[in-house]
Length: 586
Image 1: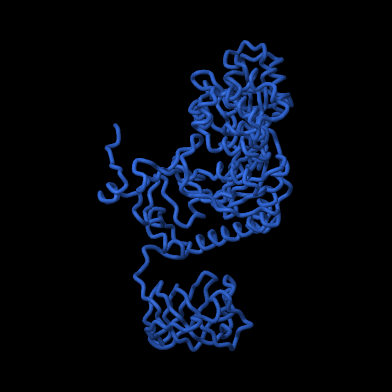
Image 2: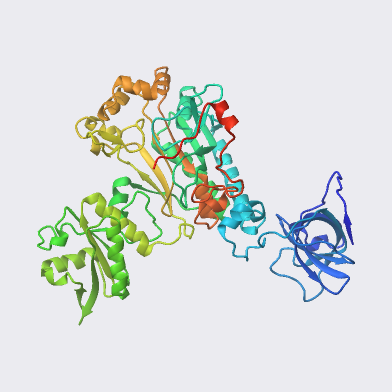
């Protein structure tokens, strides 16, 4: 039986679809949801799958049933056991069904643009244009509910550790350092702009001056940067700052929150998080975001070829990668590998297949005939290669060599970021400065307010590029989850760092005046951290793109296919804001 109505009782349903069980047999229940599959058995009997976010239950409806897929309905009926041989072991409700059903149509629906079950392979543009339909699919329901559980676990962890949740402004002053910001024109102050925060960095440091001691926020941040798998214009991060805490304590606070979230997100609490220095990460893995799920470390061959006459290895650094069993690669595959290395900046890539003749190891390579016996022996000893292995070698400046091999390492041995196991690592002791500008002045690797390592303070003026920072990143499966640092709170150290960067007192006041002004009124020692919740949840959900754990994401080009944003605004509104559009420069 079907009726058309719009009832407004005190309670529209007595339970959820996915909660009906054998223990409810004989009970009368009222359910609400969307019609899934509909199967006709003759003219006067139909089976409807009724779905809400909790699951699906089968309803046996007698008589005429004027409903179709995705109709929103209310069904009242009696819970009964399914007939023998019809139990569905794939459903939690598979032992039962509803009989004596009365169906009330709450809202009719046009046929959806694609199937709501996950079996349908739907193009992403269609999914994003009709996101309200896509969100009904089990994949998105699972992902967003997982995200909610992770957020709740993070909040619990921060509350237990005595952090205070404080919201910081979304309309803020432009930040002179960091990523590109979104600008918001002011109607009341024409010609002037707010900036949407790329992070609450300065606001949370002011909270430390204000005596809040331990602050946190699940913060919305915005950056006008190119989009990719792990980056959107809008993102969400756990943002925290605390006073009177060491770097180790801050990392401990973060570790607790991440492990609590992981336990909720995966059902397993990870082992203790590993720690390595930035220098070791670069030297062994070629990146400050090392994926520890597989070995394949970079091998230093600089000493082996220190006096070589092979021009390809005449460089300050010679490093290698050993690929277990890689000798089966074809010549075309090796040529592609060489091309890949060159695209990353290498002058070339040498490869060696390890062979064995009567138990003696040898090398199959175009360069083998140029090696001395000592170099060949040193090569095999350093790489610990066995018959059937492949060794690839790059020779160049240290950082470039490490970077190229670090990328090839992931190409050759890596796997999608979301695949287990989950390997967390703290990377610590980053450089305070990362290179120099066109005038030879050191540039801050993180930001100008990062505290130098106490052991390196005496080298700020004499050897600034060797100074380590009290900064730290948390990495999971090759993705940087977030970063943080101990902040400079002493005026004398801040002045030395500014001076090293070529920033005098007048420029510092112009660029950072309101923060420096606050620091003159009793700034405590403090530090903080922020990690991306989108990235963390994506990995837990088994997704390789954070769009799959965001309700309304943008496309790779930054468009919102659902709303049509970005779009032009009326000329009257632009005039009210005191702005006008100009043609893009060509």
